[in-house]
Image 1 (cartoon, rainbow, N blue to C red):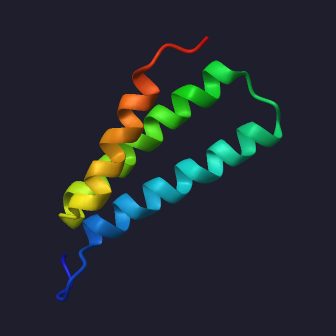
Image 2 (image 1 turned 90 degrees about the vertical axis):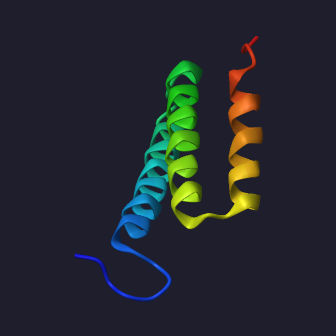
Length: 77
């Protein structure tokens, strides 16, 4: 079921996925997770944010996600 207006339940789901991922990253960071684990979560965050930006049809957000994706594609020293 979709509600009327500018938002949809799908957009809310995507936003929730981003918030959940940020919370997981925060916990992992506080617990001293290895960098590789954090990096994988950050990559997941970019995928979640990309999905959300696509649903929102927000070009600025989509461009920001692309920049993050490119940065995360770089090898980690």
